[in-house]
Image (tube, helix red, strand yellow):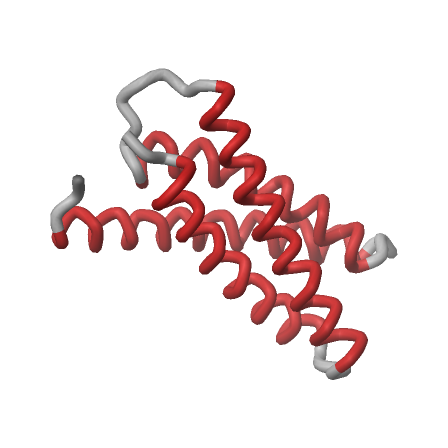
Length: 129
């Protein structure tokens, strides 16, 4: 069980990794959309790139897992991230198609929603000792 200081430290590390994931995600997303890939398809590709980065860094650094990775852990990670991806798809679609907001603003809002879901899933379900 983590104490308050350890929880804050893991949240800080998660946010730091999240910044890296966001840079990977945004870079791939805007690269794909700039060459004409539809934004929802680009979101799937960019999210996948960020997700791979996320698994490696969160497992090793954020949650400092000592035991060997298991297929169950990776499966939980994939399920948690698929849920987060669904959140980003939904928010991105609503911001773009219903609200008509600019793509950058839509992407930023979708990313924050996905990050919140991802931390909760990672902390409580995926990377547990």
